Length: 211
Image (tube, rainbow, N blue to C red):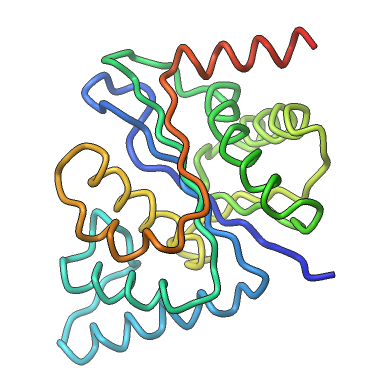
């Protein structure tokens, strides 16, 4: 049986009321090595243009770099899942529980699609404190009802997770009306797109607890 590795990152923030939405994006693949090909091809393109950047992040990369990265990504055998949380001006505490809630609702869609094939879930490190990471993992695993290998990585050390950053950034730009051209490059790879507001997220959590 093939094993799927899922990479997750977000764009937008829970606490900032100016952020209208928070996007959480998951990129799944049975061959994580192909993500390194995307990064190498993008860096090679940067080298040709005599440009270097420390890491390829959506909000640091220029237009040509975004285009190249996403064009390379859509060539690969990957699946994309996104969750858009509408905030309506709310200032939401960025706690392990709140972040776990939105990740749970995203990963549920991944599990419906992949069934029992998921082996690892890798997050671009959201919480720096090990205790917060531990709390997040426990809440997430309890909500999912399954025990997964969950890792929190520094994208400088594991740049593969930047694929989910690029997807999340592209989706946020599209959902907020800034620009949809980057999202359009990858939309044929999207398996599911979920849109909820924060009250709906909390309601789903309360329903889960009451079962």
